[in-house]
Amino acid sequence: MYQKIITKREEGQRFDKYLHKLLPEAGSGFLYKMLRKKNIVLNDKKADGSEKIVCGDTVSIYFSQQTLQKFMGRKAAPDDTDAAAGDPPAKTEIDPETRSALEKISVLYEDGHILAVNKPAGLLTQKAAKEDFSLNEWLISHLLTNGQLTAEEMQTFRPSACNRLDRNTSGIVLCAKSVQGAQMLSEALRTRSLHKFYRLYVKGTVSSERVIEGYLHKDEKSNQVQIFSTQKTGEGSYICTRYYPIRQEADKTLLEVELITGKSHQIRAHLASIGHPLLGDPKYGDKAWNEKYRRQYAVSHQLLHAYRVVFPKLEAPFADLSEKTFLAPLPELFDRVADA
Image (tube, rainbow, N blue to C red; front, side):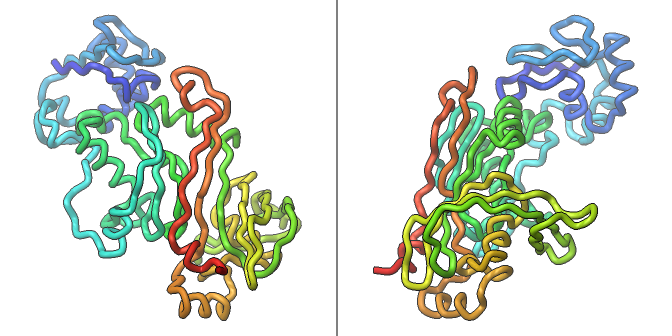
C-alpha cells in the first residue's frame, strides 16, 4: 500500500487530476475503475474523482510495489524522493550569459502561494530546448534549497512562471508555488484583471497618451509578427496597447505602456508599426539608431522592462495581495542611456 498526505501546495485541485499526475502512466479508464473498486481511496472512503482535495487529506493506493512503480513511471521505490517524478533540475553546464543573469534575479514578494521576481535580461522564462536553464529551473532550485518543496510534491504539482517575458525583456515575472496560486494567477491573467505596465525607450518624440488598436499575426517559423490595422480573413488576433510619455529626450522618449491585451511581441511590434521602434530591438527596431547606442552605451538588446503589476481585489487566501502593487526597479542600462 502507498499513502500520501496532501500538502498545502497541492490542495485545490480535483482528485482525478491529482491522480493523473501521481500516476501518469495509468489511463483514465483504469483510474476510475480503481476508484470504483476502492483500490484508490480518499480519507479511507470511496471517491469518484470529482472531490476537491484539501491539505491534510490522505490518499491510499492499494497496488503492488511493481504496479505502483509502473504507473508512476519510475524504477525506484515510491518512498525514494531522489527518484520521484518531476525531475528536479539536473546539474548541467550553464552558459556564461545565463549564469550572469541567474545571479541577478531578485525576489520582490513571496508567500505560500506565489512568488514575484525581477527577471534580468538574458534569461529565458521557460525552456526553449532540453539543455536550457530557465527561470523555471531557478524557481524549482530555490524552493528545493529552502525546503519549501520536495521532489515527491513535484510528482503532482510543479511550480512555474505564470506570465512569460522574452529572454531579453527584464522585469516582473509572477510564479505559482501552489495549485491555488496557479489557479488565481491564471484567472487574473485570463480576465485581464491583473494590470501589467512596462517601461521602455522608443525612437522619436511622444508628447501625449494614446490607445492604439490593431491585429497581430505571428509567423511561427520566423518567430516574428506583423501588425495590421484591419483583420485579414481568418487571420490575426486583436491587440490593444495604451502608452503615455514619462520623459522626452533628444532623440527618444521614455514611455510607460499598459498591455490591455497580451500577445507575443505586442509592445515591440505595435509601437514600431506607428513609427516609434524600441531602443535596441533587433527584430522591429531602427538598425542605424540601435547601432549608435550599441557603440556608445553597449545596448545589445531591447530596453523593455516589466515595471509594475497591480493585483485586482482578491478574497482569502489571497487577501494580502488584494489591490497590491509591485514595482521592479529599472535596470542600470536605462540610467546609462538617459540624457544628462
